[in-house]
Structure formats: structure tokens, C-alpha cells
Amino acid sequence: MSDFLGLLATADIFHGLEAGTLERIAGACEERRFPRGAVVYRAGEAPDYLFILRKGAVSHPSLSGGSERTVRTPGEVFGIAAAAERMTRHAFTVTCLEETVVCAIPGARVREVLKGDPSGGDVVMRRVSTLAAEIETLASERGRGRLSIRAAGKVYDPEGARVVALEDCSFDVPAGGLCVVVGPSGCGKTTLLNAVAGFDHLTSGAICLDEQVIAAPGRELKPGPDRIVVFQHGALFPWKTVLDNITYGPLVQRKMKRKEAEERAKSLMEKVGLAGIESQYPGEISSGMRRRVEIVRALINDPKILLLDEPFRALDALTKSVMHEYLLELYDLSGKTIFFITHDLEEAIFLADLVVIMTTRPGRVKKLIPVDLPRPRNYRQLSSPRFLELKQQTIEGVHEEALKAFEAGERELA
Image (cartoon, rainbow, N blue to C red; front, side, top):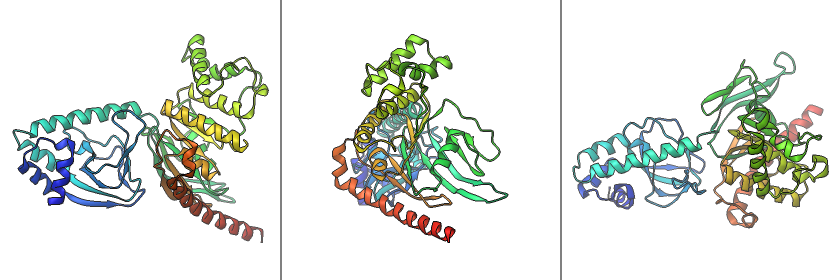
């Protein structure tokens, strides 16, 4: 118990409590160990335990509103909802970025002990309530765009050839997260993106966006402005100027007046190096510029989630590297949830918070790799030991599935 007591004494939230009160809380502590990639708790789940970090690192949005999303200092507290009264759910999903050890304390026991300490308990309870309110506020600000994929399955031609594209595919993308899906050709990446976008049905399972079902068996296909796709081959109107292409969506939907839409478009264009080309046509600008125009056109519509279908695949290496930096700049500015599919493993790690490796057909989730590289990111990180470690993990996972796909193809041709 002495180890737990020392850890509690370092936690800011318990500052000012009497020694006896700390001892009673420490008596309820238990040590828990989590492997890298494990989920400690999910948004929406009942908050049973308060956690204090002993060792390792977990993802968690910063209450200061900055880009830092990692808890890694021993003594830091998370899962505060468990100790707060009237908090019935966790606001965020917390994932281990490396092997992690925590002190877990039943929230009900914390409340009980604090109520029995007339001198310091009330102060700590008010502190907990204040933090809980801040967490709820932050959750509401960042809460648009949480994607939940549950046992998603897709069978093409079920009465004939019966091609199983997806099978029992499950993972979560938190609001404001950047998820990149990789895997061999035919693993179901595009099928999954099309289901999220509302372009294709599921045969089994469900996909939810902010707790609302957007794809399920028998559900009517319903693409919408809350999910916007940037396609690999582009979809700009060649007869419209760049500015008219970008402002088309908000004007048609009557979300903005023309002046407001044009001012917003020019502001976004300036941020990605497109100032001065407003009156040009798509055929008059480079492929890299067209990709940037498409991303700006998507963002101006304020979607909950941005879906990117290998948008940089046809670009040369230098142009692609520039596009990565522009995309990350827009991501940091907008805080939008991004769902990105690619064959480029280095691209996946450099961009993502979470890399999802898919198996060969039928597509299942083989491995989830949380990417704990700090943001904002730049190309110096490509040579960092941590980046190279993550890259090796990804290569090993994808290579194994690519070999399976190749062998299956040989058998089919034999």
C-alpha cells in the first residue's frame, strides 16, 4: 500500500487531503497492466474506475485545448468521471500508446472516502466536479465525428459467387482522430470507406457516427454532407473556376451567403498555398494543387468526418510530401475526424493517430497500431527511432497479409 500512497500523494487532484484519507483511498487501489494498443475505457461506457498513471503512456485529449493528446507523467489522473457525482459515462476513449501500468481505484470508494473527510474532502470533490465539467465541455466541442465500426461485414453476390469482402471488422476512431487503413489489394479498405460514406450496404454489423447508425443491413443508402469523400482521381467541376468549385457546396446547401463563402474559401486557400489561383480552372493548375483544392472544398462544408480514398497515390514523391504537410496543417487547424486509406505505409504512419492493418480477403482487422509521434509533425520525424519502430511493425503486419493474398491468387489461377 505504501507504493500506492506515494503515488496518490503526487496526484494534484488529491492535494490537501489528510494522511488518513489518503491511506483509505490507497487501500482500495489495485495495480493494472495494459499492453500497447489496449483500450482502458471507451467513450460512452459507465465510469467505474479512476486511474492514476504509474508507468507508460495513454492517449487523452488535452484539457488545455492544445494538440498534446498523451498522458505520460507518473501521478497524472484520468477517468475522472468515475469520481464525479452525476457523471454516467466516459467522455473519451483512452488507448495505451505503450505498455502501461496504472493504479485503478473504484470511483464509488473515492466518493465515499472524500465525504468522510470534512476538512479536505469537500475541496477535492469540488475540484473533481470542476474537472468533470471541463471534460464534458471539451467532449461537446470535439464530439463531432466519432466513428464506431462494429462487426462490419460485406458479401458481394451472396447467391452466386459469394465474395466476402469484409468480415467481423471492428474498431473505433475518436472524434478528431486521424485513422489510416492499410492492407493488401482486395482487403476491403475501399469497401469499408464506401460503407462509411453511404455509398454501399453492409451485409452484417453496423457503423455509427456520433452514436447514430449510418450503415447496417437493409438500411437505406444515405450519403450526406456530414461525410465528404476526396477521391483518388478527383471530382472537381472542370467548367468552374477554383473559387466556384470550393464555394459550390455551402452555396447550394444555403449554409452561407456568397460573400461569406468566398471569404472562407480564400482564407482556407491561403493556408495551403493556393492564394492567387481563385479565377483559374482545374485544368490550368497542377495535380498537387487540384488535390489541395478538393480538400479545401470538402472542409468548407464542415463535415463531421473527411474520407480520403488514396488521394495522393498518383503524385510524385516530392509533391506527395508537400501534400502531407498541407493536410496535417489543415487537420491541426480544423480538428476534423479523418478516415484515410492508402497503400503507402510511410504515409500512413506519418499522418495517423491510429493505423489499422487489414487482413487479406475476407478483410478483418489484423492489428491496431496507435501512433504516438508528437504533433505538429514534420519530416524530421521520418528518421526518428520511434517512427522507424512503428514503420517496421506496420511492414511486418502488411507483408504477411500480402504474401497470403499472393498465394491465394496463385491457387485461384492454378
